[in-house]
Structure formats: structure tokens, C-alpha cells
Image (tube, rainbow, N blue to C red; front, side):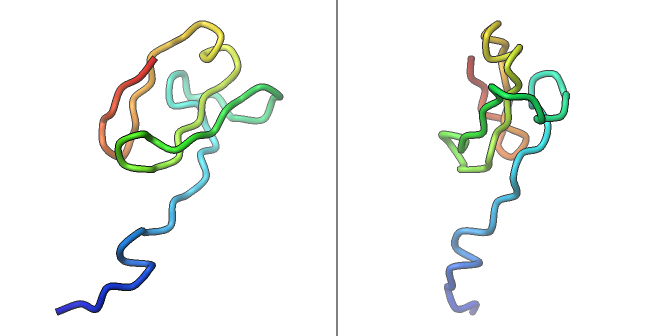
Length: 66
């Protein structure tokens, strides 16, 4: 049986570097990075998709949001 540790209970999340809605690199000002409300994976969204309220889908769990 595996002993619970911080690493296997809450695996390290990678920083989002692309917009999950359109795929552009997150380099311009105004982008957002936030944890998925369902699984905690980091989600990245570009300024344009945020302003247009484009839907996004978490690549980790499939959660969808506006």
C-alpha cells in the first residue's frame, strides 16, 4: 500500500501556456490563468477569448465554462 504524501495526494500542476479555447500562446497582457473549479488543473485563457466569453474545456477533467 502506498503511503500518502503531498506529491501523490495533490500532484504538481503545470502552468498553462496556451489558451484552452483557441490555442494561442499566453504572452500578451490581459490573459488569465486559474484553477479548474472541478479538478484544480490550471486553465489559461487569452484576452480575446475572455472578452468574447468563449467557452473553455478543462483538458484534465472535461469541465466546461463560459
